[in-house]
Image (cartoon, rainbow, N blue to C red; front, top):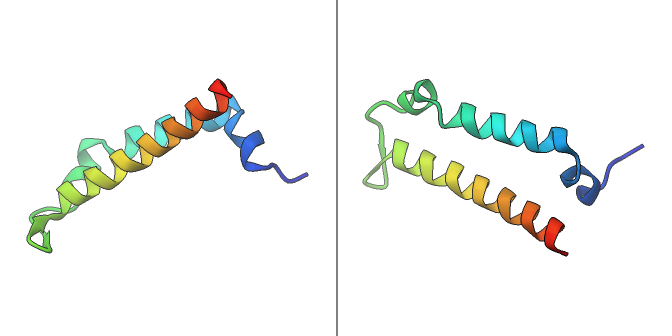
Length: 69
């Protein structure tokens, strides 16, 4: 049986997975993988952290939206 997005966001295991994914992606070894690389005049580490932060913020928004409505 396929789960819809609404059903998936309601499962506690999904939120534990997102927490662990965020923790892993913002862990020090993952941050050092970019080294001193630069793209568009910015260090890749800054872009990486901004994208992970954005992903976590969107997931928290979806979580809050589901529980408030």
